Length: 125
Image (cartoon, rainbow, N blue to C red):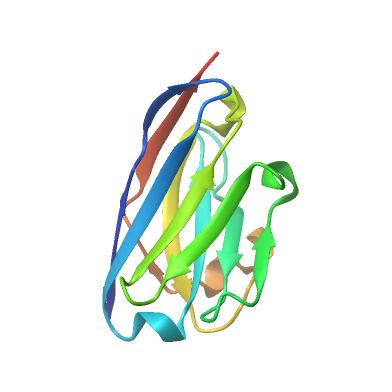
């Protein structure tokens, strides 16, 4: 069992930045791929970014490339999502999740096993 708790969401103006954190407890964090997903009202949940256990494999959705950066600190059992140049369309609830292998893309959403409760990100124009 893995427990995930996201933090760092909030209200920010367009062009601003936020850093999301996801703290994990339970089973060995360092062996899991960690992913970030988001869901806006009325929309399906979509993939944002993923990082494998070593940090050697990283994937991003096209709409965040160059703006968001995923990283992890296995010593702290934490994964981060640095979000820069935020846009109003980035407004959503952001979730972190774990997977046993490296899966990058919304297509693989169902392969992510454990999910946090989400943190709200609101970007005003």
